[in-house]
Amino acid sequence: MTQRVHSSYTFWLVLGLSLLLISACSSATPPSATPAASASTAAAAPTIAAAPTSAPPSQAKPTPVLGAPKALRSDIQIRKIIETGGGIVRMKRDPSTNTIYYMTNKADIYQLIIKPGNASGKDKPYTLAKIGGNPDLIASGMAFAPDGTLYVMGNVNADNTATAYVYKGKLDASGKRVWTTLVSTAPYQKSNTQFDHAFNGIVISPDGKYLYMNSGSRSDHGEVENAKGAFPDVREVPLTSAIFRVPTDTDNQVLPNDEAELKSKGYMFADGTRNTYDLAFGPNGDLFGADNSPDADYPDELNWLQEGHHYGFPWRFSTMDNAVRSPDYDPAKDKLLQPDFFAVKNHLYIKEPNFPAPPAGVTFTDPIANVGPDADVMRDADGKGVDASDLGKSIASFTAHRSELGLVFDTAGELGGDLKGDGLIVSWGAAAGTLGDEGRDLLHLKLTKTGDTYQATMTQLVVGFDHPIDAALVGKNLYVLDWGGKGTIWEVTLP
Image 1 (cartoon, rainbow, N blue to C red):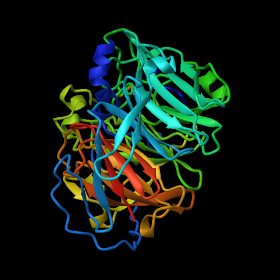
Image 2: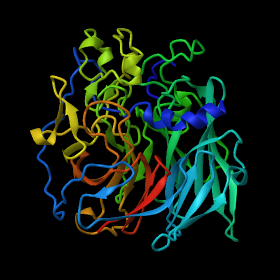
Image 3: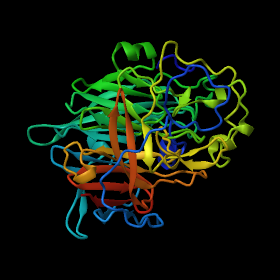
């Protein structure tokens, strides 16, 4: 990645989602190579007037009861489909058949059989053994190509290193999947902390020619994580905190842990993302991703991911410099720090006068501005949580720590009214904090192109999920996978 900042299986099964999600919630960001004298307060993005909508009147907003989702509009209905038993990490639609599949972190893959009333069920067509994957694989990503080819991603952990794999299951003439290894990575340095976000989100391009994959950071905010002395002075490495792209027509590719090689071979797509756990293409073919912020109250991000762009990690979060880079930084005065977050409790936020300089000649790309009315709580100069749109301001892009997942778009234009052609995203929910916007909801994302970027109007549609982790859209029905409780899959019928 552009000028990198220095370059037991059972444990992972128990803590996998903590490492990928809960550890901290968002990052990746924008311009400015020099830290401000103080970045301890949340600076709002430029004021933008909220876009009008033509939605039907909202119902009275209920107090969320986790695991009992409630619609906030009269034209939205919700029903329980099945309980999975929990431990499900992905749920995706096969566009060639309009069927839904979901996957455990052991790569057991189930087909969701949707029937009226309470008659829905499941079938298990694929297992790790059938895929032929590494037996120690921790599955983390799943995607379908337009022709129905199925891709499964996962990570294999050694003591101090990790290796990622993507397996491709292509249908033969008889309808049976033939599995091959599309790509793997060279082993790369873990931090052996909860900030090892690993490789996780994948998506296939609309033409089926490329697979895009996210690799999360190995640190909270770019601090040194030496894996108990195994890797002195290492912060991020070439195979972390970036979006990679590989062609789907060539098997057994290997991503090297070398920045120059990744670029020369065309594998590096975008740099400076912290943990873009979900990726999705919009109706116009633009690629978007939601990025989770660190253990300080910097906003989570929604980024328009473009080839060759750098989104700022670890030098910038949202539209603010990483405060630890400031020569005047004092964590005791940093109003973005809350004591119940891991990195704060463990004193990882310290003044770093030797923090590596940003990449020479690189302009960071700003996240998409959220003009409200929802998911837009920020810290003001006094450290108080305030609603940005109530003040006529925007943030880039979501309330900190909501951890947005399950991004989908109505690419077929089958939704009606104000939702037609727009985006939808769920929120895993804040692991801690006092901002008062904990997520665990469904948001409507209306993106508007403004010059060379987008702005978003974000509106709550449903509240009360229990750690929703993924979503899949089939026609007017959005299927939402709850990770919490008994792992319920909900059907949200939209207008």
